[in-house]
Image (cartoon, helix red, strand yellow):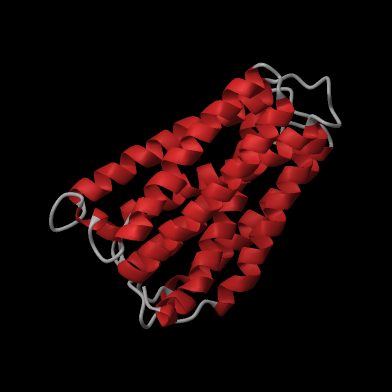
Amino acid sequence: MASRTIAEALPFINWVVLMSLAVGAVGLVVALRAVTDATRGYLAFTAFLAGFLGFLVLASDPALPLPQTLAIHDASNLDGPRRLALVAFVVLTFATGIELGRGRRARWVGIAAIAAGIIAMGLAAFGWAGDALHAVPLFVQMVLLSVVTGASAAAVVLAHWYLVSPRLSERPLVLTTRILVRALGLQLLIFLTWQAVGGDRPFASFTGDNALFVWLRLIVGLIFPLVLSWLAEKTAETRSMESATGLLYINLAAVLASTIVAVALYDTTGLLT
């Protein structure tokens, strides 16, 4: 990947990474509120954090350049609907945080926030892919990135919350790590499927010009976090929260790096990973 191409891709990478963190985090909050005893302080804080990240996406969206050397298409025709969805996501996510801070379930406003975020990502995927045929797999990748990246960040916050809420049951963290394990497993399966059917020949990307980044995505970005999340789940089950926190910190670093690589590969080469 040429340095000029990477520099041009940075605003788009920033957009996807921040949006993935925001949508995934609020999605996890809504799920934990529905089925666990996670504290309202944690739930509200994480929802407000997701809203702030969404605001950063909204603020940076007008600065997205017209793609010139990238593999993605000009999506300026969808600027209006995408930004409207972003505004709705930010407002609804902050409203979710307010409701959770008051001790309410915030089910419907939370679901509406998630839906608005998914719509914004869908509009971005459709615009950058250029047509529906290529937009669907890109949209799938973006949704999975959101689940893994957002849940990884929210999991680190949750693990720290046990320091101030020692009576909190282990169920919220166990459920969070289980979600991560399953989402990463699905990511790995789809990654292998795309490499098998997406090129001129099966798994050609493992030996092509971008082989280094593809192998990094596989080993450091998928297999390594999958193992870490599984270990964090097992340590959380035994209430070894300090160990789980350390594992989740490493997991978050690997997942963020993996998300950046995945987005950069698609934006610069059109390769789905």
